[in-house]
Length: 428
Image 1 (cartoon, one colour):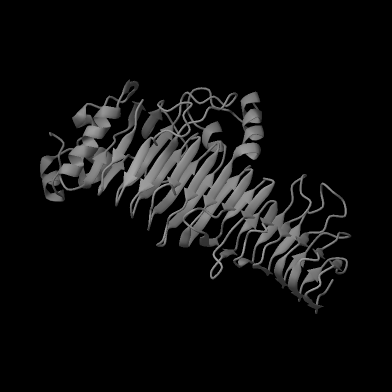
Image 2: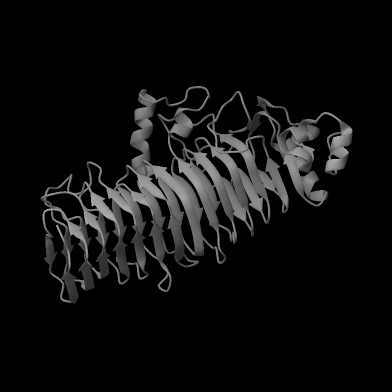
């Protein structure tokens, strides 16, 4: 293969960079050009890309370079262990047909349960790519299989834009211990990221799910802001999109993860593999009816949110038994908001150094926090709206400690609990 690069010394001796180096520098083993890929947006490149990936695997692993251009796919790709499929983007980016390494996916339309477009295997990686579904129509959204699925440890997705996937990243159908996602941008339509079967720490960093990834893309017929297509997209997302769905994972780290206009921002569930244990820092769900829904969390570890921002509601279901903690978080309402938090289950829910604003916008008189079960600790928080109810403790609450908070206009707390409740040292 004319673009095979063995080491940096050989690259420097060879003179000007070939297509492989153009995409991945001296680390490239081969280029997709070497195996017949045509970057015209029309030629099916499935077989050519798979040949390049298999060639790299035969060489013991390494980088398959994807130079700038448009590559069309009607089938699926499998990235072998130890192989990276790498384009030219080096950071998060909007889709731009005039720049970068762009994969146009047309296969799988109408088959939600089909094989994923890309299957990552152990220690494999996607990097520096734009993935776009050119036949997706915002006026009549069609299901597709997952765009990316992981199988095995150390699957990584870095510097990737998923313009308009139906379902984005599936690190849950198969075991994906120690997975890594960094700098992911996109507009998923049904589900952004699914995590499950992770019994060793996964990391998800710098994820931004926003319809602008599709609306502002330099592609044919985007749903531009203010157009009927944009309005259709904004109607669809709050009725369908789950930003992050998280099942069994042990000590998952999520940092700077954001979604706007979801039906559910962060959804924590019990699966046949178990329950989640997650630490979330500087994460947020914006302008959606449910920012966080906790149906399950691990009883010994639970969920911890730090420095997060949520708009609008938190729901802890009666099936939850683990601790759920919010520290230094902000909560705002949307026009449909009644409560910022509805709490049930047998676990403990803790709010520390949080602030709340804009509840009871849909139903006047609705309290900011309604606890129907479990245990509640509320400390050092600020309730900023005047002349509104703050907390209602219903009969099923096992215990509550509400102390050291600021309740604008004076505390308005309704206590129906038969358990032990301590209230004190609060200010206006």
